[in-house]
Length: 223
Image 1 (cartoon, rainbow, N blue to C red):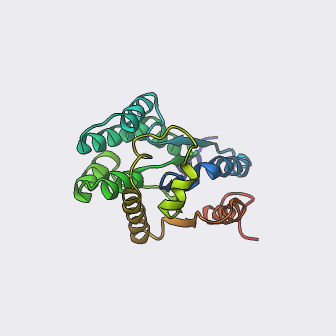
Image 2: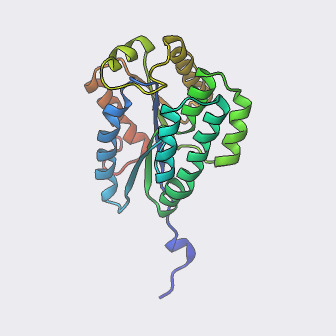
Image 3: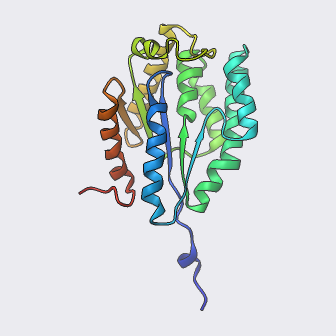
């Protein structure tokens, strides 16, 4: 018996990103989010790809080290971010979505607008040109933004590890980064869920549990 293309077509996966300033706490929750997502999707035969930016591919990880540790011209920094993103999209994100898998990424393009744009002052117009060139219409289906006062974030990071060049930036820098994140969220409310990252870990976990209903994850829909 033959099957029509419609009958055998794979339904594309979903693309979820986690964003927030350094110290906002997203890394504390992303692994649990991925684990819960995997449990829900296993029943329908879907996989979850957990990845990150900068990084996500061998080339992306090499660029990550350069971007996080080496001093460079601002436009060079932005170009390297988008070069890594192009590789990430081509080698990881788009193939996974085409297979019907889900992708959860620790940062994506919103971070570039926030850090290189808001924080460092690179023109939004230049970033928008790179965004269109590198990813076309591809945007996350959902972005979870951990929002936190930079002073609280800095206190959380103090002494945790050797800081990279971004983590060594001033409070004023992180205020600009935060403001740009919130501007992006306001411009695309259908895509963003903003989490008050000053809440307890338990409260945030409860809020994230509600996100699964929004994503229509099997076994986690509205009761």
